[in-house]
Length: 264
Image 1 (tube, rainbow, N blue to C red):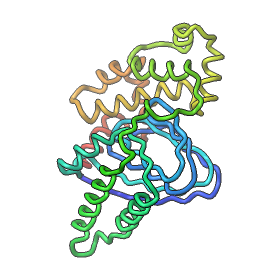
Image 2: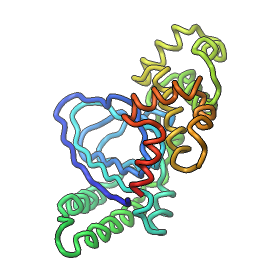
Image 3: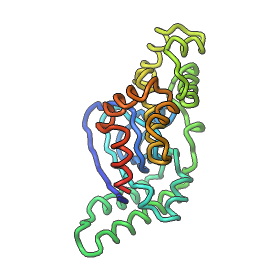
């Protein structure tokens, strides 16, 4: 089933997302107040309000930091018309810094979206029209087009960035932490310590999250069996894959595939 949903959240103290995560829909993350450390795909950034991030499906992300105010606008791929799809593809993985005037306009549109009564006559039409206006506004941001690789990164050592890139490219390889450390000519304990220190995520959790993200993408976009997907994503066995998947998603891989397809 096609869907669109919006959420405003104000947090007055230090807060961090529990874990890296991904989802099969688009997300706009609009930081209206405060600052956040934002892990996106394979790099960590410092976001200062106002800032907006366009997160495409199946991309891992996580935020942490002090007091903040933000809007999340989530929309399924099948909710989008052709113009919106093309616009979002251009903004995928972009971190944008709107001017004060642009930020005020975005806040106005998001507030209108948040307050639409979908039960009223033409409620869904109003929601859809406002969303299209939001996409048009974002597509015209002057500071758009900056991708993660051209933004200023937080002070993550080159070694950790190389490990992140390596895992993203070689998640299908059945490597131990010892083998991974050997590839980068560093002690296992040193690699584990520094990865956690600079990403706030353990190395094994990061690897599992990359594998699970790829697995979810294959479950939704291919007809491959659970056993095949387990193998393609580097899990030691389909049973282990199933246990880890259910622990993270509260659904078996097969039920996740069924549940997500029923939403389309």
